[in-house]
Image 1 (cartoon, rainbow, N blue to C red):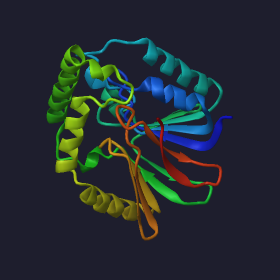
Image 2 (spheres, rainbow, N blue to C red):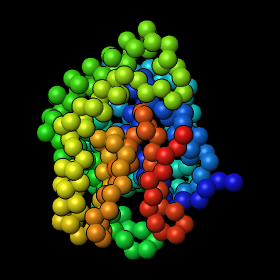
Image 3 (cartoon, rainbow, N blue to C red):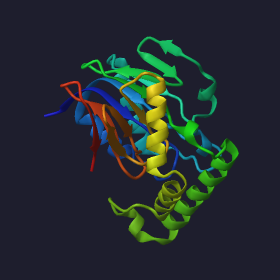
Length: 238
């Protein structure tokens, strides 16, 4: 039986990146129903388009499924991320059941308000440095794929992703992220905040406020969903 959600919030799928797990994401989506799906940026990795891009069958199946959701009038909201290329220049686009925005205040069925933004605004890394490091990690992955047979195992996390996570944990400590995120949520007069970008799935409560990081579909396979009770939860799909 399919699980029913009011909203599914996803981030950092990075279609076009060699090691994206859009095949697992497709399995997850096929086993649930939703009224709305929110992509929190970086669904397509435009930084990869001129380097390692090669469309695969898994990515084609995923895109076709999203098109079917749109045709069935599931509302799709896209919040722009730092890898979104030309989409970053689109502002408040609303066409039928599709919206493209830079941020969003999301209200649950229990009238709690959450501020959604990609999270790259907390970075000290600029766009150029980000592109260089992204190229480096992609190259690491391709080298490991060439020489390490373990990379084909289902739950194996590539060395490039483990290295990236160590870097982010060192330079973007969770306590600092929590503090800055809660301050932004308070500024926006919301009950909580949902970010992504850092690929570190997380859920923290601070008195009456909540912080979520939706993680990614490169290593963690996580999403934030609003269940039938109107509550948000971080789920791990394996």
